[in-house]
Image 1 (cartoon, one colour):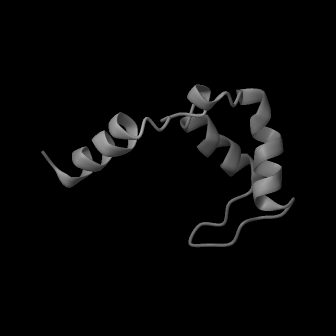
Image 2 (cartoon, rainbow, N blue to C red):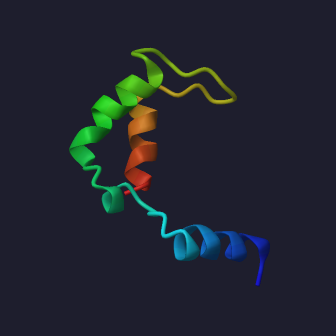
Length: 63
């Protein structure tokens, strides 16, 4: 068993943490507000700057 599998088993099996936004009750309709708050109506600087639309797409992958 790899370290990643052990960690995954611990977090999601032993601790019972949720894996997706859907599992914790966050709906796709909430993504624009969450993204706007995450970036503060601006662009998050970094290796690849992230605009609100980029953050929303990341959230969509976490459903």
